[in-house]
Length: 403
Image (cartoon, rainbow, N blue to C red):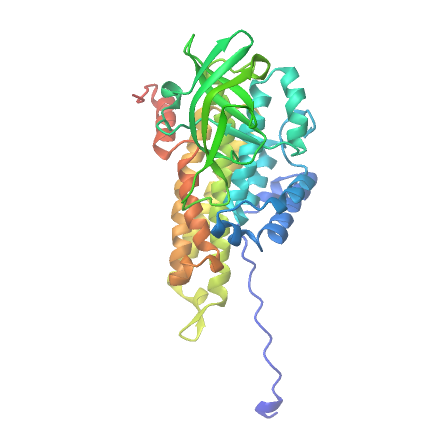
């Protein structure tokens, strides 16, 4: 047979880029896994093709909201009020699937379903839950969560400066809130303020159209650019007593919400790391240098190994944490350990992914740079590594190192 008659060599079939190396998704029931896959398909088919453009323009893709509504996953772990009543473990997988494509979209969803709906679910009266949660579960109303202030971040427990003064059946709110996701366009915002009479932190559900409630968009962000963060200014903003969360009477109640949602941020960090890793692996499989794919080089395989180790170990932590949450065993320190360690590993992983791509790693077209930038926000919000370290340190030593 002459060389001209030699049949063309078939392209080599390469392994799929899949960060679920230990098949954690198989721990889900068939029904739960179907929901996870529905979210994955939406993120890959609807979100992935357009998200970099919105990220670059610092805009939110409102055209995606009907698709989000159709998923029917808002308030996923809550029982009643039009919510699905599924496990927090499933919610974790859903958050990971979202962040695997784009951390801004998982953050938008986490603010709405975790922080905003969660505040009402944990701290609202029965009447308040019936009033707000069904429409929020349908995503007919979108929520935000206003705790952080321009001069108060980690110190909100004792340093909150936004005030609430009661006059009859009305509360008057004054102050500012910063970095509030969804605030520029959402319908309802859960505002945390200090009661000037008893000094305790209380929660209020504020309609964004209320007089005295003003939002300025925060510009020039380098991370989570799709999330529309706002600077809220409250100037004699009058809120009815009926809109004060009836079971939010101290910062301990606020902390219950944060502990619940901190687990979701750990899952998001796994998704962010996984998205960067899978893009980097696919790139290495097709990028050629010195006449062969760089995936065949030892140092590249070592980088991929280290990325996968971080993702796999972090996902193991998250799965167990969510199981403990479903079993009623999770405490603040458990959520803090997961958030702290998973975001550190995420930051390391996305950096290695950028390194693997070389100069191409900073191009939005290659996706990885977006994960690198967004990782910086996930690393900081819902408790810095240092704050989470002190929460864990207090639990394991019996001594508080907080000032």
